[in-house]
Length: 239
Length: 191
Image: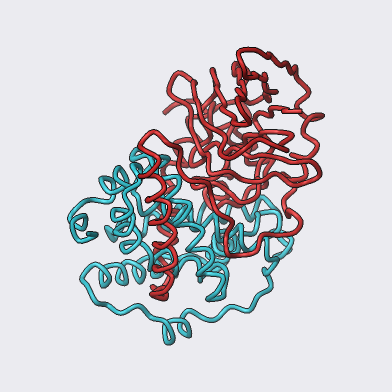
């Protein structure tokens, strides 16, 4: 049996709450950091995960209305046609606004944290101009990504994030790109990504960057979020 | 035609979805829409809300199909994980924690999915088996698991609700899942 990681006593009972999504944001981050160093907790999470994964199947089956499939497939086919017309190397079509109404005020503290992030991260920022485009060195949260270097390359109001040394997102999560305009809450983009094994990653920022003040990246549950649930791992100031 | 893809495994379909193949996505939807809608309904408590959540989740899956990784489990677990996240997100946006939920029995009377295929019948059996495993848990363990997973409450909120120490709530969650896993493993219904 492998020895427990540092601080194991504090987390000895947390695996269930973690798998049920019941840890608060700060605790979740701290627990995931602990998991990285504690084989005992990792083993327990792996052991209990099948029980948590079975919970959705405990619900009595209810057939969705047939028209729901029609609505979803109409959008999928529209986007597939755009994708086919644009060619295989094109980005996925931009995410349309949902038919459900989004909140007027973001309910999560993480959203507010994004608005004041410049203070929270507090690292160097730089900008290199030339060759018809601009390269902005992003601020990176060094507590989570001590070796990461991220650049936002902008050309004709189109942005591309290029990262090196980026750690993999926590289990079950993915990096999501957000754009923030003046005085507004961050808007989700369809750009979801994970770095390669060597920590490198390149992803386009969907849409025009005109009017965008910041491009941000957070880790979010698989499939992405409509509002940020974490503070950003990196921010690029575009103005 | 979607028919051409129906013989493929979910994991193979996701490779096609990644390349923008709408018919492959349609098969993924057909296979998992009932489970997704049922879970969304169980969490948000309204039919309209469940439709919105299911639509959000599947369009998100269509747009982020490249993010599915075999190593992290089945497509079904991945899909339902996304639905769960979207549903909890919906709850928190709508502040409807105090909503009145219909009982499972009532929902089944009105919207029960027909057992048209062997797969659907097997899913229903699986649901019964998992509910039976949950029923074997002590009531206080089952309660905290349901409040967390289906209610979207944190362990701190649950502790306040139940007037119990946070450590006790965390312990009940852990022990409950542990016992559930043992029950399910003995019944050979683990996925």
